[in-house]
Image: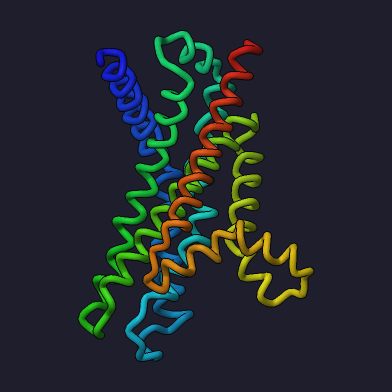
Length: 248
């Protein structure tokens, strides 16, 4: 019981420390402005919400994974790189904490940015709710889906940040992969591919699974897919730390 309490305490301490580090940098605030501004411009100006006269936020939620695929790597690209470059990783592993503590602490630090993005994004739906009869259940489903997307992205950024020694490399690899897996299912609809390959791409594509949430459908298979993806990325992050600890 005491050991479990100690583990929880170390994770909370690490997460709080990482969150403070993230919010003490300009990158986190740049990410907030970038996502909020771009999503609002897309929804109100480019997609022209008011001219369409349709009470739906689907186009707003459709752009968020694309923006998150850029914003979350930008916020978290340094999350491990700085530890390895400055030599503080050796100090961290000398403390009475496990690799899982370190991984989950870093992950929760990035999730503080994700949850802030999600909370601030509520401003757009609130601004248009008086202008139509929106399906609240569908909006809830869309928000649930975007939280799962953000969780998956944050976990992958943690993994990539542990592999690469350069912040720019970590950012580019994370962004390109997340953009690819986000739009792959959409591209398949317009590109002729062998049926077997198209089926595989649709299965792994975030877009394909996120579309169900945008329709107001919460399918347990889609939820488990995002949870499994996140856990796999965090587990891979732990393996990288074990390897680096063995090297040091």
